[in-house]
Image (tube, rainbow, N blue to C red; front, top):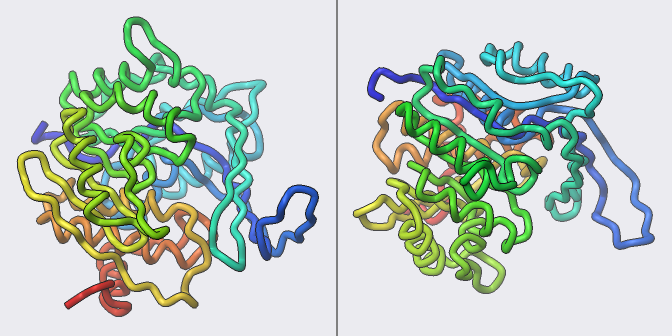
Length: 339
């Protein structure tokens, strides 16, 4: 494993049809679209690009399934522009590329996503060949929105388990990216994966879904509850590190160690354009720090810095800056609850 280098992102490649509206309407109401664009999205795409924006020298490969259409060509062009190795980003005929209508409310900054699985529904363990990769990390997502991967595969509870087991068998360290689907569905798919994970970097909602324990009090993440929930999840699996992030910061829980809270960046409200992709940027910063063998607090601070700078754009990856610039801007804005 020590000779391995770089990151293999796998799973969701989709086209985000980003739209800003003044507010999210109720049923039967009408609201105008204020601005829109189309960018790459999904865990496989976002983390790959974020890593390359943080440090163009880090090797990044990817695996996914897209359609032979305009959205698919946009995704291929983005992968090529950043130097992502995409020979296993499979293009299929007759199916539309997975796309998301990603709405951001101008009033609240909250996001609403409506998606079509399209070609992503065909992704399955047969698409994953780890025999020729030298990547150190596998970043895999998104369970719950890939029809074949979500089903039983052979004797495994689902295809995610099959893929994670195969990656670990050749010495690749594993992490999963989740999305905020219905808690009971998320728990059913993810819990069988936990014994096959080395890391789990998720948000507090996803942590609560897996553990079955609440993480929120008074409409905000409650740190003692997040820690308790993280301990429950850690006990369910084999992860050596669990990180739960939320707007105020992140709880870090290493196996056999003490929980640590690392506050997030105090981003000026006027700098926030959209939160779409902030979780991916956080994960990219943490994975980069792990890859570079940074101390844990510095690693999580880079995650927060990457997430903070990403907020300056409607797209998921457009505003992520190189490592030094991300950390410098975070230092300029300051850290929440900093002494």
